[in-house]
Image 1 (tube, rainbow, N blue to C red):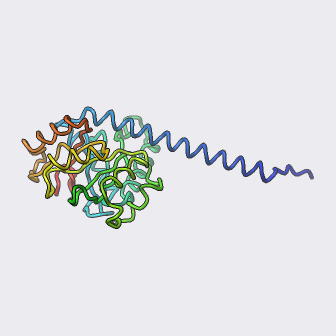
Image 2: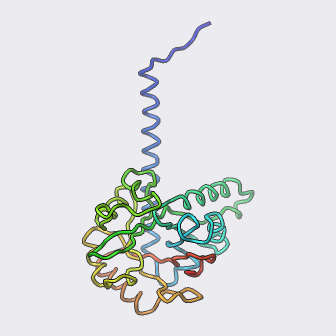
Length: 253
């Protein structure tokens, strides 16, 4: 009996090549996801949220009341085109929802049953900006990237690693976009925080946000107009989101 032996060096080379190709495809996929998100954000306005897009929502994997599958099912029922699950310091909710969504799409019996929803990676990270505690949202990043890993452990990182510059760089080095969340909710005014965040290289700001917790949800007038102007002034991408922590994606609580 003849046996075809493959030299160990050739086998290792083949495996290494396969791994490199897989990594390259993943990086390219992440870049495409980021590019697609930028195109969407460039068209975001006051009417985009909450029935077309929602880039700020929480599940039971952090401090929300909706489990990830219930959240993604609700998003499909609403008819959302795009969504980001932004749990605090974890992407577990996103991973569960994405797995369910992939299964739903691959097992759809008819084309009409395939959800058109795009789910981007998301996270909300505690950070420090101008000696103020703020939250920075990350989108369309590779959750397995080494730079983002320390920020996905269900808790804040030590203060020396939680400066806004470090958080922004970690998200961007993972291929994603960094966005300052609800800039009018902090101890320092948005007119101070946004220019500084821009100086540190942030990509966007959460422009359309319901500061008054109204039902139905809508972006708070005047405040969001001021934030939008600052976003224009500093050439930052706008986002919108309900910041849902309850059982209804269409409101905050």
